[in-house]
Image 1 (spheres, helix red, strand yellow):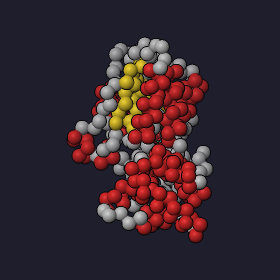
Image 2 (image 1 turned 180 degrees about the horizontal axis):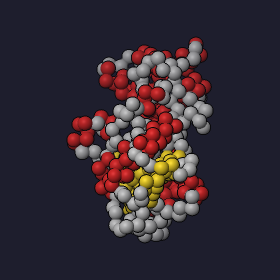
Image 3 (image 1 turned 60 degrees about the horizontal axis):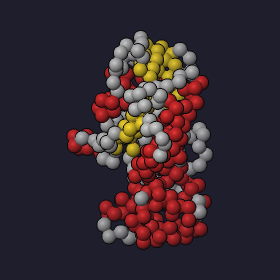
Image 4 (image 1 turned 30 degrees about the vertical axis):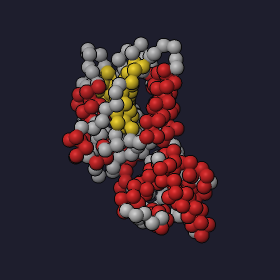
Length: 315
Ligand SMILES: C[S@@+](CC[C@H](N)C(=O)[O-])C[C@H]1O[C@@H](n2cnc3c(N)ncnc32)[C@H](O)[C@@H]1O
């Protein structure tokens, strides 16, 4: 079970510069299948790597990898080999700042956030894929702390709020009429019985009578994307992460590398950029967005909407 192909891997690695013999401090705030982390381990021999993921399965898989790669466990979270220290936390990346403080780490050189979810999570997190019709509408990446499922949101959320979510998180504003019909239908259906499975939700979308199958699939994808973002509070979490960047990227040349997959995430980054521009002293610069190469787009369909934001400390 490791279907995930890391996105923009070389582009992320290129941003990491080794200047001297001192250890490089790197946070991988979205460990996932560990693709980026493993490549960073290959590149940076003198490394303190702090890995976070809300998904226990992803964490366990990485711990097995560390064991198999002959890292020695020092305590609950720390693994070591030669000049590499790996800290592994089954935590939300909103906890990065607090965790670093607890460890008395004042600053890091690089922080990576590869947002969203990994391909292999489709296999064991119910409701993530609209192709698995029998799945329960769960969608929680973090089953330990998050009690709210997509089932609860779609059945008990106010229709007004749901419409707002579909516009904001799913970019469904362009489908004005269809969206209104969908919301109306949803209201009727959930009075009759609970919308429990992926099939229940997909069947409502099918009633909307799209002229082209591709439009139906795209609408479906956006509905599922919206629910996943709402369930996992993805945009709220991203806001928290951006807000503590200035407190951990203290050195000139330190960088955050944030891979986004939809306009909602880019909007939050733009707001963060604007908030920094309003300050007297310009501490950070935003590099031009990096998109996957033609080769990557050809070989990895998950990369098609990916964009790498590099935010670099300049003062
Ligand atoms: C796109 S995958 C990362 C893939 C990884 N970079 C790789 O190369 O294998 C995103 C990962 O972030 C995790 N994730 C999503 N939101 C998170 C959050 N707020 N805090 C920590 N991890 C999160 C997901 O569980 C998933 O494993």
